[in-house]
Amino acid sequence: MSSRLAFNPIQISAGDITVRLRPSLRAGLLIAQQYSLDELRQNLDECHLGAISHLIAIGCDDTTRTCELIAAKTERNGLCLIQDFTPAIVEFVKHSIGWTDDAPEQAAPSSKPFVLTDHLTELFEFAAGVLQWSPADTWAATPAEIRHAWKGYDKMRGSADDPRNLPSEAEIKEGLATLRDLSGEAA
Image 1: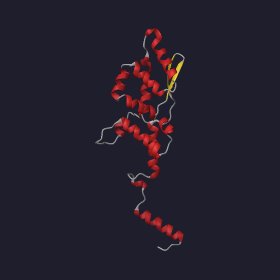
Image 2: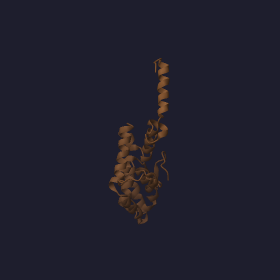
Image 3: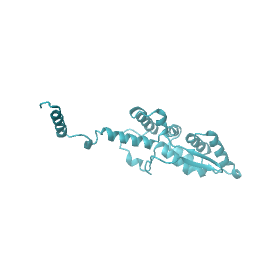
């Protein structure tokens, strides 16, 4: 799965109740602060009602609808059918924390261990600080959107790591000579 920029909100339904989950940096940070990746996997595998309800509430604007949805799914014939939500919840969590299936290959080797909350905080700092997005826009963006904006920013300013973006010494001298000629200044 690659990092998709635009997608429809993730919908989950029970009867006539539909809730839309909106992945975002805010949701990702809330999830990462509450759960480790192992805890998330275990809670989803075991269909942990409390964790799944919490994840739905993080991604949904309407907590009343969230409660109605969970109640509708757990009351049918006395059976808990919450596991029906698992694929949608997994998709929501992946987009919110910025996980892609090729993430291990994307990461450069580092002596410092990867900490998800630190990474998501760094994305916020970049979007709100460097790109000067409003906090509301930054919190509403997904990690993928912020990473792609970061990539575009690096392309625009010319990354020092990419020698193709920097003029050679000869090009600089030629450019200065051209400017001198145009201004009538002697070399």
